[in-house]
Image 1 (tube, rainbow, N blue to C red):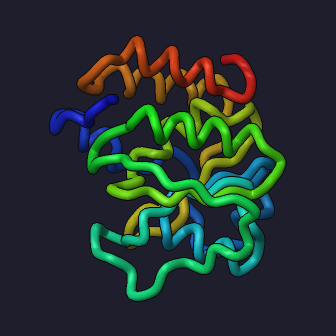
Image 2: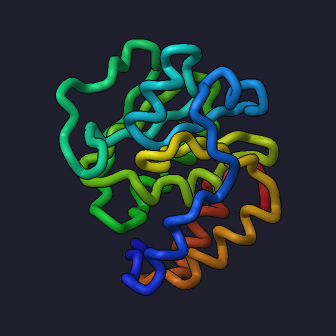
Amino acid sequence: MLTLPPSLRSALKSPMGTVYTDPDELLSVAETPLITVGDVVTETLLAVCTPAVAVIDDQTKRTPLDESIDRTAFSNEHSVVNDAATISPALIEALGTAIATDDSTVIVVDGEEDLATLPAIMLAPSEASVVYGQPDVGMVHVAVDSAVRDEIKGLLKRMDGDVDETLDLLENNAVSGW
């Protein structure tokens, strides 16, 4: 498991891609598979499409949602435990399995999904779109390619925990090689 050190928190505050507020505009540039991280962004996009993979935790801004997101649009549902400010092996494995299938999947996190964007980018095939919420700003679209993977790999190497084991797990669960 990797843990986010306090010194790295500020590096993750800036959007890693282009910010959108209009779902149709975002979808006009998004590629497949479309992977969403966060309850509000997932719910927003569910109004116009079903993401291939969605990662939710029934919270927004660390506050429980009044109502859970309607999950009936998804073919599969997986539950994982992932503590706040961490990336667990269970989250990586669930993401890898979900991305590799042709069926839409929602991953429900017991804990926190905020850092799920990082393994999602590492596990997704090139040209995939990972979309996550930027609180009070909009939806951030990340087009997966080798440059963004290198950036994420650099961030992961600065986290606390067994970085080599985590990178091996990511590489072994990735849809396509890095």
